[in-house]
Image (cartoon, rainbow, N blue to C red; front, side):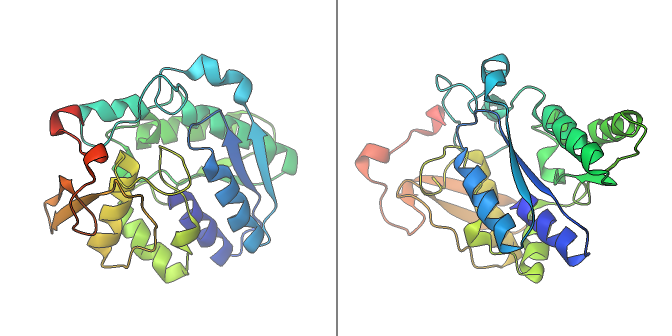
Amino acid sequence: MDSTTLLYHLHREKHDIFALSVNYGQRHRVELEYARRLANELNVPFEIADLRSITRLISGSSQTDDSVPVPLGHYNSENMKATVVPNRNMIMLAVATGWAIQLKANHVAYAAHAGDHTIYPDCREEFADAMSLAIGLADWHQVSLLRPFVAMTKTQIATYGCKLGVPFEQTWSCYVGGTVHCGACGTCIERRESFIEAGIQDPTKYGEGAPMLKFEKGKGSTIDWSRTLTGCSMPVHLLRQESQI
């Protein structure tokens, strides 16, 4: 959602855009094909940096290590730290900076937002400030770091993306991977909440194990693991105990 909204924002601002995705061996690498299709629709040059050789060096995360399960529930749960990939943003921004220098581009842009900060250290403004300084010192050709969403919430990004005409049904968020969004992992819950709070129809297709969310304005949502998002009883084989979430 975030990166695609950034893509459409830069496109509206009439920047010359080169889009980059990174394959670092992530569990949810289905996102790479979604990114390719979106870039193609806007006629934006697109590349994938294949960094799978470092996957074992940044293991220990649910996203790079198959032995670590993807935690389910809200992002504010302590177990969501299992989704943190060591130094992911610095690695990706460094690769993007190298390409930007080669292209003689002026900026590298990424879509970190305010909701990321509590879980992901490399999405904080302090990190972005330091990275921006390092990028500016990396070469004789000056490149700066753009982070227009760093103070925005996920809901604000959903609202802005809707105004830009972002085809959110063509975006991928789920950390579990698969062929449809699970609707239960942290990033799926955050995605669902952002549409609900923004008052926007969620176009995403979710799996049968997506739990019902009870949303209260100003307080966020509570998860009913016994019922699906359609209000039906959760299938027995998918029932979860909250103590395991």
